[in-house]
Image 1: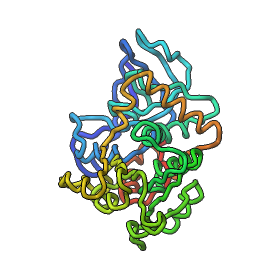
Image 2: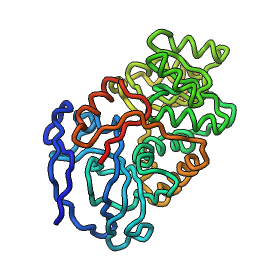
Image 3: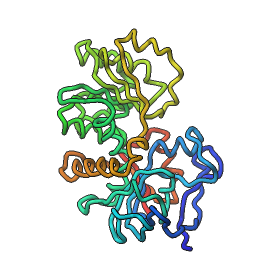
Image 4: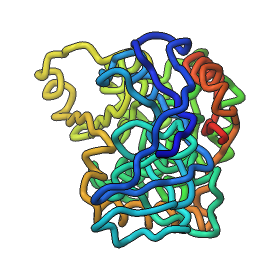
Length: 326
């Protein structure tokens, strides 16, 4: 049995809990694939798992997305072959590794035109944007979306996606530099939430009408004011909680504010079906190969500096995507 350097946690806590060890890599069983990885992506879900917000059975590896080359496949795997370039966003965790064996269903063939680094940086984030704009609620050309954290990895893809679809995107970010980055990537308007009241500004930008959809990965700090930004019958999509979980609220508020809708999706429900996952990935790849979407990789850390990468992400010192190089 071969071994590969892999990041694990044995207890929940801060970045210091992550350890880089030599871990056994099993041969692929039925429905599995072994991948020699080239790069892996960093996401806030990794922080939630490391800290125990999303509990894991310990000890556990970390990491949800990566790219690489197929080494071998198990019985029943027909969409992958040894030597193929691939990328994935998938459960269970384990992407922070040189080589891993994992379920094959959500592993996707990666076009030659897309680099391994881009593949690692865009799968979880890009498929998140795909389900936000395509699969959660109808969003048509001319509709208006408020997107929080618009200069992050998901946010910059969302700005470009919205521009390619003729959707008006109002983005928020925490500095003038991040606001400018969101603008450059397709946001129609930006709001520095540290210096402006985003609720008042959204009302001003929409002539008091509000937006059709709010996409919010911030959570507790923005939830109530985000509801106030919606027009009647609008949809609030909470897909993360970077500032902490949203506290319980009175559901009657939704009626009082205009028959609003609220949902808390997760990417893993959307990609659970093999065929659906592959279709979503193909649309994402088409957006990238056409030039409509370009992943921004603004931070790179070697695998053995994963703790520094987590610290930068938690301190909101990052823009775009962060990858771990192998």
